[in-house]
Every structure is written in structure tokens, then in C-alpha cells.
Image 1 (cartoon, helix red, strand yellow):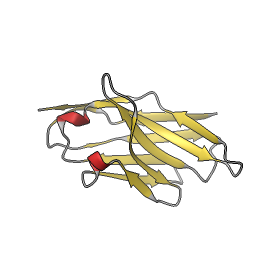
Image 2 (cartoon, rainbow, N blue to C red):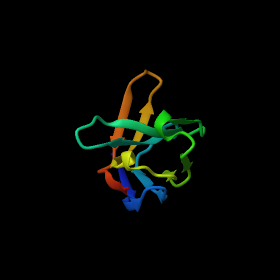
Image 3 (cartoon, rainbow, N blue to C red):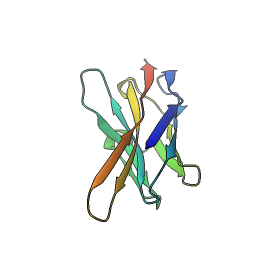
Image 4 (spheres, rainbow, N blue to C red):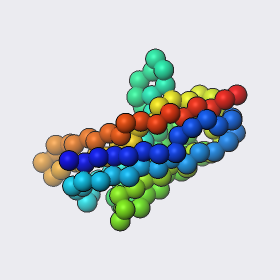
Length: 120
């Protein structure tokens, strides 16, 4: 089984920065995509950013230019650096690891979530 452990959430003022981290452990397929999703109260879970094992990145339009995602594949860790935070970034942030097999089947693993609150 794969387990994801998140850290780095908290309270920050608008315009500030936070760096989250997520560590994956267990039996991890080498070709994978790691990323972060978020869910605001009353909202749906949405992709924030992700990065493949080949380091191809993808960002939600709402965070482009403000967030930067990186990974350490040797340690199975992923780090989103979140800058210029806005109150609308307030949400529970979830780490995700996705494996897409040659057959086309997909395994998704999720962390427990970490709260990020941006005050105005």
C-alpha cells in the first residue's frame, strides 16, 4: 500500500508564502504523477498543480505565476511553493499520487489533507 504524509499548512496573511511537502511511502511505481488538490468549504476538490516523474508540470490557471511545484523522486517527495497567497487560496490541500499503468488502469492515492488559511 502507498501512504502519503503531508506537512506545511497553516495560517498566513495575504501576500505571504507557504511551502507544503508530501512524502510518499510504500510500494510506489516509478512512473507516477504527484500533485496537490484543494477543496474549499462548500466547493469541489480541484487540481492545484502536479508534476510527473519526468518533471512535466501542470498548474491550475488560478495559481499560475504564483505557485511552483517540484519533486525529489529519490525520496518520493513533492513540494509546492505557494507565493503571493490570496484569501481565495484558503482550502484543505490534499497530496495525490497517481499511477497510470500500461493497461490504462489508474490508481489514485490521497493524503489526509492539510489546512491552508489566508487572512485578508
